[in-house]
Amino acid sequence: MQSLLNPEYKNWLIELKSKIRSTQIKAALAVNSSLIGFYWELGKSISEMENVWGNKLIAQVSKDLKHEFPDIKGVSRSNLFYCKKFYEFYSSKIVQQVVGQIDSNENITVQQSIGLLELPEIEGVFNLQKLLTNIPWGHHIIIFTKANNIDMAIFYLNQTLENNWSRAILEIQISSDLYKRQGKSINNFSNTLPKPLSDLANQTLKDPYIFDFLSLDVKYRELDIERQLIEHITKFLLELGKGFAFIGNQYHLQIADNDYYLDLLFYHIKLRCYVVIELKNTKFIPEFTGKLNFYLSAVDSMIKDKSDNPSIGILLCKDKNNIEAEFALRDMNKPMGISELRLVENLPDNLKSSLPTIQELEDELKKLED
Image (cartoon, rainbow, N blue to C red):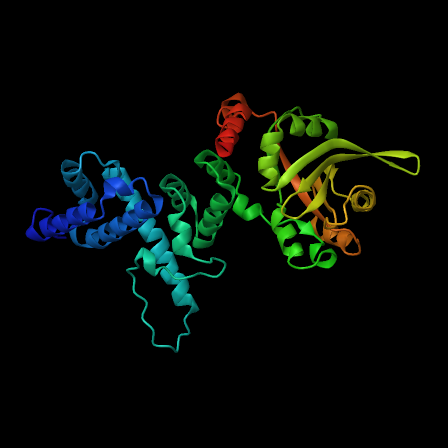
């Protein structure tokens, strides 16, 4: 490794300082895309030069840049480390993916050093460079430090942009492992809904649904779950996902002089359909789908407008066997999905403090509305 005191380091530092001045980073701090682009270039330069000057480079360059630019917060030791990790996370994994897509017989060389404007399009991502520059830096740090792979990172980048998540909400979704749960329910949408509605409906559902904000004793009933879900409707809607509008609980339907009550009724704005949610505090049994199919027929006949898409049912059970659930849905003519619900029963006091309170969650949701 070369010494950080030699002329080469000094020349590199001069070039770095010149780049900061030329891009007017003070003004760029207010423009997210410029800031992210600058952090990418900064991380790229540090990553390349660290191979020459060793792991003490970040501390030294942070000290030198702070002396030269005392008003800039983005040159702290920790932030320079994140810039390096930001560049290395996406560039190395993108190179690996591109290499994997190249036929071994083709004589193509992939450069390890990638500029932000040179990022290739990846399957499922319209424009990765545009996606990266539209996410705030604080969100980026959470994502690239917690994501295990490029697909997981892109999932949370897209979700953050689409749902306008705050950092607190993003951390909640990552800690609940949304990436692995989204679109994983057992359902019959491909047989009961036309494309692309079936694909959209499938991505709307999760498995399992995690309701760790409920306070329930060991001996609780389905009505206890329903009552607390309504009491904490903001957190419930957050777990359901974007697009759900609450209509009512124990929604009354009168059919042939008999009274029926839907556990929870929603309207999904993006799917343009009613969604019936039935809660079962037991293991799944096939008979549940028959009753939900009946409810969906009633909603389609009595509530659904001509302009609405077919109503969808979600059956939330304490446990299920996937094969049994698939058989139960095979010949049902109404679109429905089956997922497990996860609750935290009798949570110890020392763990309760680590979970966000309902007030904290509602405060975050208010920020999104402002």
